[in-house]
Each structure stands twice: as C-alpha cells, then as structure tokens.
Length: 241
Image 1: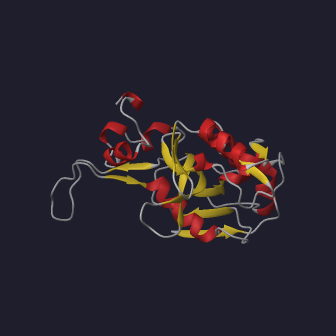
Image 2: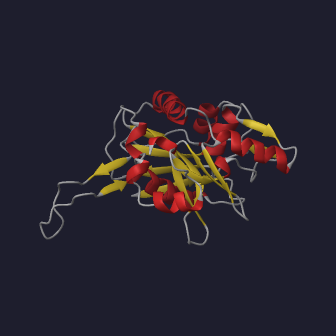
C-alpha cells in the first residue's frame, strides 16, 4: 500500500472543493482512495460558525451530539454513532471559527467522489473523510473515518478459518478507520498544510453501494457500553437499549 500526502494552498469557505482538489492533484491511478480532511468538507458546505465564547461552543456541542458528558479536558460525546470529543467541532486550523462535521457525510462523500471520478476519468475511486480522534488511555491523536464512499469500509471474516483452521466467529476488520489513521499520519496535525492523501493498492473491495450502517456497531452488543453507562455518557434507555 502506498500513501502520498498532498500539500495544498489554504482552502477558503465555500470554495469549489472538486476544482481545488483537481488543481493540486490532476490525476490519480485507477483504484485509488482519496483521503480528505473533514475540515475541507465543512468549509465547502458552509458548516462554519464564528467563534464567540466558550458558552457558545458548549451550546453547539450539546446541539450537535446525541449524548454528552463533560470532562476536565473536553466534552465526551456521541455523534452519528461515533464517540468523539466535542461532537467533532474543531477550532484548530480554523482561523477563529468553529468548524462542524458535515451533515449527511456519506452523501457529501459520494457527491465528491462522483465529481472527481468524472474529472479523473477513473471507474474505481474511493473517497474517505477523516477526522482526528483520541483513543482511551492512549497518548496523542489518531484519526477515524467520519464518512466514505466507493469502497466497503468493513471486512467480514466471520466463518473464515485462521491459520490453524479454526473458524473466526466475531472478527470484523475496520478498513475505513484503519485507512483514515494511516492517511492522517501522512497528512499531519499541525502546519503541514496537507489535507489530502492518495492511497494506492489498499486492500479493500471497491463498490458503488454506500452502506453507512456497516461500520456502526449495535450499542447493546458493544464492548464499551457498560463503561459508557457507568460514566453517564449513555444513560439507561437510550438508543433503544
């Protein structure tokens, strides 16, 4: 697998994102996946709020999340079926604004994919929208896929044998988040100004079918649900549990 971060100019609010991408990346090989920082989609679609005060930001966090727990460092929230800080609202590299995660992320990812596929004249193309995430009890940030299009984000290995012939019973491989994390490592988190990353030879199945539900795990079966309930992030009765 080959990952190539793309240095760009600064992207401005409501600028034409497909044109911006093609200007910096005139072509990609067939069966490439383009990782795009979620900030670009927020700016493209106008998901921007001028920063006014900490109270205003807190109100936005509560509005944008389906569950929220205040911690000494940030709000721990659930948004779009993902656990994240501050409902994904970001101030870094935002020039005094608050950037929200794009609404209908999978639809927007596919819109971008269809336009780029035509511009680049390729058949198999994936688009992966990335955002920074923090893993419990681990130092530093990594990244996750907030949306994607053009490929299957989860590999189902249930029923297949391991190297000793034992059938796997529960193993699902999260390809989308794995690729997002690898791409973000190349794109950087500071002043690298590389919000795009081309991923070649990714071990995924390309598909025109978008299945946003495949990567969302049922809360009643999730390993972390008891911990979330004990902390108060997920209250009894939420999410039909």
